[in-house]
Amino acid sequence: MAPGVPLPDPAGFPLVTRPPDAAAIRNPTPGTGEAPGHRAADDPSGADVPAEPSALDAAGALLRALASPVRMRLVLSLARGPRCVHELVDELSLPQPLVSQHLRVLRISRLVRAERAGREIVYSLVDAHVAHVVADAVAHARETPS
Image (cartoon, rainbow, N blue to C red; front, side):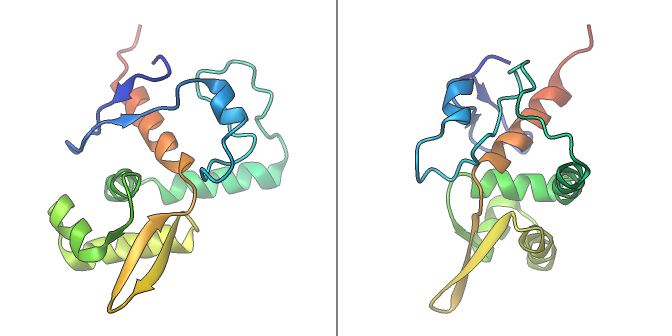
């Protein structure tokens, strides 16, 4: 899918937009939360693909943490901004214990951070490009085989 094209979310959320070009990913704007060296899925160079086993193990752990449709929906929701549990429960129409359980997995995997705000805990993405991984996976799943 071409960069800059909005990707519809499978859960019916508003559109998630991929970055406009691969250069913006390789050279992110400071303070955007993008990881240095992150490479666009449509960049065929493969220059930033790690080959060392520890990096591949970490990538496997990331994919396992995202391997649930509920956790993918949570990531896409948090990509639009920080949310409290009750906001996520209302938005996703899921039971609070289920949302909390999946947020715990994302927190342990260091994909989501939790910060106390008065009596509530506000959840946000640690690294914004995780939402792009989910959006790319959804786009790939929608592609028709040639």
